[in-house]
Image 1: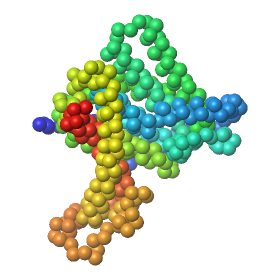
Image 2: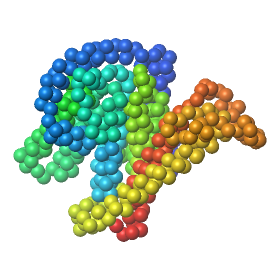
Image 3: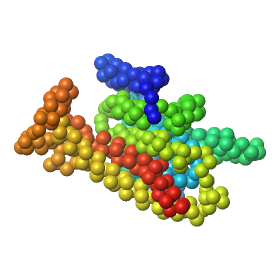
Image 4: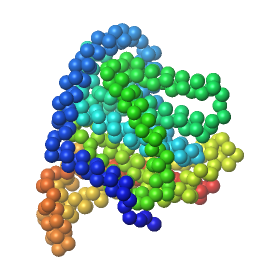
Length: 408
């Protein structure tokens, strides 16, 4: 049973709220952008000749290799890989990497939209976008490189986890693992420049911010995990944190897909945290069977994947439909004008209560909403958040329950 709000929870939430208010009153986003954007833009232009020299090595095999590497460390890849990691029995690693991914995604995209610095201009730079995901990435701002930032953090944390929990390794094996991580980060950095997606300053910033975030996470990950599995106000605190983070996100100079990515992983983090907090002792404790053990052979693990993947896709579809319906009803009830770019049909965007008899409760709620600014609110954010929260919840709650019924 959840107790009252603790001191550190109140401090974190009030700090974020204070930042939102201060940023709005003093235009902090605009001030920081005015100081950083011109310098970064000059660096991007100065790096263009270096990018063109690297792209003289143009060959179809290099295009394919770097494109595949970019997909392997992309957000969609981790979105598919992390559920499988949960079902393999490595629950602690899975939830830590999920939360770290959400943290990296938020920080990296916030910096991108805060600085709003351009990517290398194409032309003259040749930009290779082999997948739909890469085409959407090209619509974002440049600094820092999210691929480099995420690779540093997630491969670095995976290395830390292996060395801590499986320490019986020789020095040569440890050196080889460090070498592989270094090689992966280097190849990703070179690949982002070769593909024309980033300049050298973007890659360096991605690696630098990645090292800072990884160092911070290694200091706090134990406290975060302990809070999730046994803390007070876990679900309510995380819901409040997710809500405030939407408002703390900086407004970019021009709209980009970055906020959409953050919204999705913000929902994933909330779904994972709320699900783990409820079912930790049932499905996610340290003594659950792990893949390759006699309790969880490979055949059973493959059965989990065959059952789990379709289930979470169905839940994602249903969560989206339910969220569209609930938010539409709620906004109409409160008289809140909404806008939507892709989720809600045009005929549903406005309030349709004008031609309908209104009950007293509906009129009272609409009067209460007068205290808020009378503008149209983007309902896509709420729909996307609930959609991915439902998907993540199913990964750690619904699907493990199915496994227990099916004896998988």
